[in-house]
Length: 400
Image 1: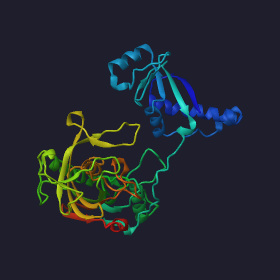
Image 2: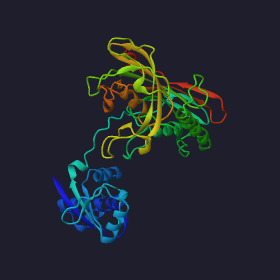
Image 3: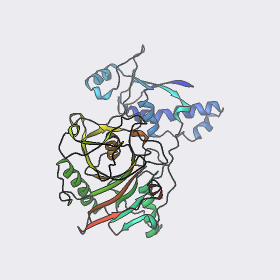
Image 4: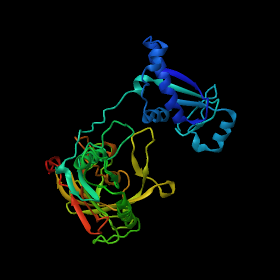
């Protein structure tokens, strides 16, 4: 059941911070009233926990309205980015989808609140995971390299109680040095998607971070400047992934083709080989374009082609089809840049969505079949070229 909550703003605050403070108080008062608690018992009751992510989802879902005072309305007109809609109701409220909207004293806030929907928690499907020696690919005083499992996020999310790989690495290192000591440092220098498995590196020293970030940054610079060298010259970090793909056509994307193209040529003019009747084993192709987020903030995060002028960032991936069997393709991907969902987007754009990647047109399966196979980069302290490889999990081998 949807209720309408009205709030009066007594002191300046952002919309997000205001609701974080006021909404739990109101919910606590309601809970006390429903349970006929005395005032002293209600005051001692634990405040109902409301996470920042829930507040943001409430705002993005267009269930929060603001009625600013006259001076604030003028400020909003001068700064369009501080408001998401000018549609007002008869009481002067407008839909506000910006968590950072600045509320002034005497402004009013109206919230359409459905308690069941607000507190519903979708099961994230994460696995329980503890790092052990079998998953550690390499470790020294400066870095630790891990074979990440699928169904496990790399870093912390808005959900404070959700486990993640960085926390698992910290626990692993903490046990090694002794739990009586302070938790060790563990720095994130690159990331893998939750459902991607394979090689990922963490820093064990803050003094190593600059060299590690430079290694990945120089790789992106090489890609965007078109430095394509078989020897890898011009880039520091070299990342190779493998994926299992299926030709699109049955689940929302037009059937495509295996495209071979020279770097820098218009891809529309490139020659093609039909996936339907010609084996693509050994075929190589490259995708380079500009990527950015194409979904609303209130929806599942999805990336796609976005013009450079509109904020798209250059992305390039080189692909090679290693094997084909029964309409499935075992594809190698070499990243030149590290954009969000880059490999997933580029393969989908070529009509070869990854098996299990429903967000980008793939058929549903037990996981997204994308694996970070190798990582090559200079050691942050010695400068020695290091290469790490994460073995494929059994479910990959079962498909070919």
